[in-house]
View 1 (cartoon, rainbow, N blue to C red):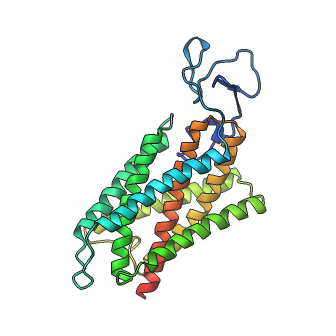
View 2: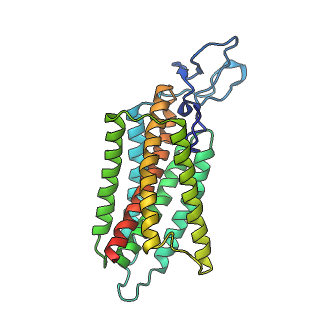
View 3: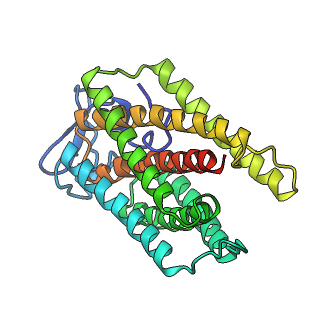
Length: 287
């Protein structure tokens, strides 16, 4: 069954198309046919039936965890550096121009690279890490602005959002494993459609905000509170899709390099959850 998630649809194994990876790095369909076309380690055809690259073996849960830790570590490192190296916001004047600029740069750059990574047939670890760095820039600047605006400089909002994100990921993973959750085609399509709709409304509100006509979807008022609740719920549902996609990829015997694609997808969702949690806590603190 083909995935609707653009992050994973480029890799056949994430779509339930089983492969057999040989030590030489050539992958063949699990069930034979009249002719057995040769593929390289990333599922692309090769001239003359020979491999073009030698992979280091199949993707495993350990390799996914390792690559995800590296990617998230890059995000955290850049976010911490942005927090420490940028000037403190004056609580009386609220001047945060440079931080707004950094947040915008990180958000737009991260969005651009997320599109590239999502539709790139062969995953690039360098681009995945570049995405993580840009998102770290956005998170560090955004978190500092939110803390100054709603927490009087107190970092408890950030700590609460981090702990909440860890709890959400751990709780969702536990529910996925212990309750043996199975993702069907209908569930997958509805979640992806809802996520795309949420992003579309967010972008519309952002554009309207440039003309001073925002309806508060991205803000910190009542509408912002509702949108953050919806966004947090979507983040948890997307985590379930991510776990399912990774499980399919491992079962299909995808090459180890595809662990970077899995790490990228998980990082996107985890950052999404953190941002929505931070917004929720800021709104509650503001009220």
